[in-house]
Each structure stands twice: as C-alpha cells, then as structure tokens.
Amino acid sequence: MTLPMVRRLNARTGRSPATRSIRNAAAVLALVLTVSDGVAMPRGLRRPSIVHHAAQGVQPGSACRPTPGAPQLSYHGGDLVAHAAVFVLFWGSEWQGDPEHQAAAAALRAFFQTAGTSPYACSLREFSVPGVPIDTGSFLGDAVITVPPVSPPETELEDDVIRGRIADEVSAQRAPAPTADTVYVVVPPKGVPVRSFGETGCGGSNFTFCGYHDSFLSGGRRFRYAVLPFPCSQDRSTCFVDTGAEDPGRALQAVGSHELAETITDPDRPPVGPSGWFDNRLGQENADICHSDGCLVELPVGGDTFAVNSLWSNLAGGCVASAGCSPPPVQCTDTGSGACVVNERDPRGCALEALVDPNLGRDRVGLPSNVVSCADGQPFCDFDGVRDGRCTFHVAICLNSSDPRVACTPAAISAIRVASSGSGSAAATNRANVVALLAALRDIDPASTGSIGGSTVRYSPAASTRNACSQYLDVVVPLRRARAGAPSASRLRLMARTSSGVVRQQLKLICAATFF
Image (tube, rainbow, N blue to C red):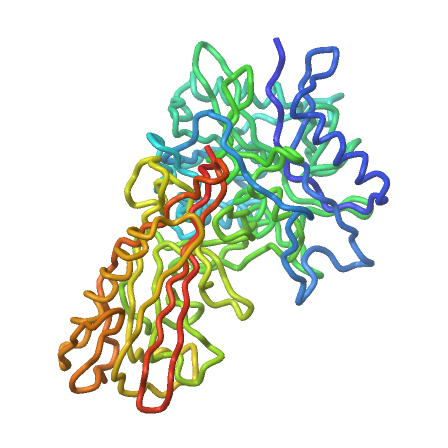
C-alpha cells in the first residue's frame, strides 16, 4: 500500500544552489509521482540556509522572504482540522528528570496550551471552506513515554515505530482516542534522530529536517500526528532559532507552530484521504512558503511570548502570524498596527479612516492596507456566506479619530463626498454601496445633523465629535463576468472637506474567484 507523503520542516543547511534547484524540482514531481517501491516522495521541504561561524538561526533585522514567484494556496478537497485538539507525547525518561528537557517541555506545553485560541490560530480561519469552518482549538494534555525510543544497535527512531507507539498509547488509554480534531505531537529526547523516507532530523545520517507531520490509518481509525525531534546543530545545519543561543524550548515552539498550522490546513494525503491546502507550483504548504529565518515572529499571548513561524495568506498576499479572533470594535484608537486604514501621508488623515473586517494586508509602513481581498464564498470574509458570483465585505467609517499611530490633529468636517467605481461591477451595485455609505455618514456624528445631496453628505454644524464611527456596512463586489474566474475590484473614494483642508481616503476591495 502506498504510504502518504510526509510534510516536513527542513533544517537550515548550507547546500549549494544546484542542490536546492534539484530539490525544488523534486518537490514539483512529488505532486504526481511515487517511486517504484510504492513509497511516496516527500514534499513541502523548507529552503535551507547556512549557519555562519558560531552564530545560529535568525539574524537581526532579517526580512521575511516567502518562496519566490507567486505563491497561491489551493484547496484540493480533503478534510481539514476544524478544532485542533493537541496531545503531546514526550518520549524518553529524560523528560522526567533532566532539567534541560523539563524546561523545553514547559515552553512547548505553554505554547500548545494557548495556541488554539490565539491570534496565530485565528489566522488559519482564512482557510475555512463551506461546511468546514476552522475555528478555535484546545490542549488535551501530555504524557511521558518512559521506555527508550531506540534500543541498540538502532540509533535512529523510525517513523513507522512512531506510528506504532501512538497507536499503542491510545490502546493502553494513556493517550486520548483519535477524532477528526485530535493531533498527536511526538517529541523524542535529545540525541535521538528521527528517520523518515530516508531522511533524518534532528541530526542523524541524513540530517535535512527539523520536524514533519503526517497521518495514517490503524484499526480503521485515522491518526493525525506531528514529530518534533529535539533541536540540534550538526555540521553547518541547525534547528535552533536564536542568534548565538541554543534554546530548545523556543526552537520547539517555532517548529511546533509550523507543523500544527500545516496539520490543520493539510492533514492528509492519499491513501488516507485527499489533500487540503497547498501550492500547486512547488507543493508547499502555508508554513513552507514563509520559509526564511526572518519569518519567525515573536507572538505575545497573555503574559507569554512565543516564537512562531509566519504563514502564507492568500488574502494578504504575504506572510502573516496573527488575525483577530473576533471582529475588531469599530474605533480607530488602537496602538500598534491597529485595524483601521489611515492615510498616514496626510497630516489630517485621522479625520477620515476606514475599517474593513477582516483585513490581513499591510502597507509599506506596516499599517492595515487599503487593498483588501476576499474570495467568493469564503466563510472567513465573504459575509453573504455563499458562492454566488460576488463578495460581501464589512466596512465601517470613523471620523476625527484619536489615533495614536499617526501624528494628526482632527479638524471639523463640513462635508464628505462618496464615489464608487470598479471593473466588472454592475452599476446598480456600485450605486447601492454609495447609498449605504451616505446613509451611515449622515448619522455618524451625534452632535451634528447630516443631509444628503447627490453623492455628498453635508453637516450642520460641522462634524467635530471625536471618535465618531458608523457600524459595519455590507459592501458588495461582484465577480467580473467577461473572463471566467477573473477577479473584480471596486474602489470606494471618500473626500472630506475639513476646516484645515481636504482629506482623501480610498479602499480597493477585490473579489477573487474561489480558491476551492
């Protein structure tokens, strides 16, 4: 029986460009070919990098560089993990008595205890499909397997032994029974490399990966699992993530976040089941695309900070590490990147800001982008909930915001003009969007009376209430029909006349063909 492919997180190594090209070509072939002995070729390999001298891992100031080209994750019809429930199996007596192992276990446990309800997990909601809404997860606990993972003369832990041990722990009721949401995470002790499909990690005879995930069938049940070998450095390869420091706990968090995200969005391969989300060009999954060292993000959750691997977002067109777990409140007073679109180049920009939920894109200075994408029928962002040839966005407007992100002095607004245009959009739909925005703007300031004339709202007295916001409005963007599946974009242009000059704001809303 053909075994399912293994998706793995590669060690950062110093292979030559020629070797990298060969491996990338192999990754493409892996989508359609299996070798003659019936063992599937691996895919989703992470691009290696060189360990320079004694320094290891992320270099200060490095940038997140996704896979070159135009990545695009596509859905291939398989099951997804809707509510990931993680159970960790620490394998080896070292996890009970050795301080280094205990500290690493505590760091990994802390991550999995909070990951399921964190902004990191909420960023995966983008990959929900109709009928399978990816949502919050949970931590089921952990256990220590006290028997040694390998016995002499073996020195490397084989993947099929790991599978057997997971099934044995479940049968002995030392681990929970598998469900569609259960994810088993196996962590061997230091110095025990794992072997899978002829490659090893961490260390071993063919050190090429830092972790992987897969699924298998046993006793008529489906098991999803990830393997995180204890972090190591060997020759010029390393699985550690901090410059000049070897912190196993943070390294396990980074690899664990990578594998958990990919298990949720692409848990299976034939013959276990159809695949989920991956890029058709190189077969890479969401964390593989954001492969460079600079894609490591410090994610604050509660009182802790975790090292996580950024994930590719189709909607953002880039790598992200977090998304709101609920619609942001309609106000533009957040610190940090915030949620509101602001014209930061205009010293009066805070007089007129826009909020689109959700908005994963970022502009050149890291603030929310004024270009927002969705796909027809995508539960995460298309609020009409069906594949009907159009996308329904949620948009709100705020006036005179106390926005700490920009140096701005609000000014009284005498009038706001609204215009809408867009390729492929029906004229009636554009007019309806403008009418809805005008009605919301008319009543936006409780201390002012708005009146609508044509495409303009005029205020008497001038609108000057601080942090005056509308509610979320439905803004509809149809797909263009001239070319099947072509994206359509609608532009909303707002111009406010203030006591200190004119302020302009523009949103570009893109409705793409569905990814599934």
